[in-house]
Length: 195
Length: 202
Image (cartoon, rainbow over all chains, first blue to last red; front, side, top):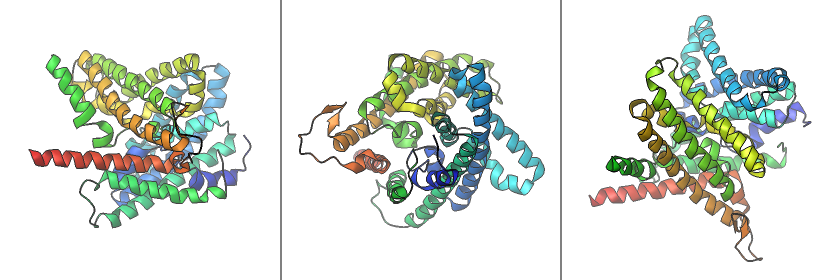
């Protein structure tokens, strides 16, 4: 797989957005997008963790899992790496900057079970990216997730005050909104395409 | 006992269907709903994983401390997913290739963790097994309906068998991601409207 890292960055933010085209991280995407401030906080935390874990998992995969020939254990190893990174980050941020902890720290435990993080790691491994590509893909995936959740939170805020049929209110309407957003993001697909 | 079992099944499949009521766990599986066969494989995988991990968590619940509980549950789930992945690789290599990373993503499917936390922690092993299996079945029900519509309109076929005549123009949108969101939205709308109507009658 040979893709220009800059292309890959834009592709992972827009055309192959992890939420809107791969359905990753849907649970927290829907439940946290009610409020713009917490949506942005979670988005920032996801970007941060995704970049670090994707790079770290690339290292673990190519320098520990492959040489030892324990590929069948990769799911468990990836999930352990993610969980420990989140745990360490939580402690670090708490020590270094209490202000950042207040805005970011409360979301960190949620992130271990966010499928987008594990998903990006698995895509990175299956598509056989090199180190730079993995780093950029993790960063782009996180930024794309952040962009998607902030836009959804902003749209939901506007929609909430409008009269809609009672059955459609809530999650159903959010699903339709996400569908329209996904179509809008697909509009970029003509420019760059990375599979 | 029998009464309990039907009650749990009814609750998990209809009244408190995890997708329709809690919108849990759509991450990993929605992505493969443009093909009915893959959807069925993934859903069966989720059913088995939910059931078995619920069973195991319930068996071990007295040995888990509060702090390490979530980590241990994740490890239990991951072990079952590894078994599932190896099984698919051995017996259904083609499907395993198309499903790619999505099989591994069953680990982070929120339904499984949700059932382990909400049910298996406070109930016996066999009851938990049944709860997990039915919660998975409720999940399968919704996804299979979505996959039926998407494959039928997107390719004009069902389970790979061509159904529509030659002149049929496939709906390209049904193959792509947005249609899954629209269909799930419509499904939720119908379900909510149905619940409201049932509530009015009472």
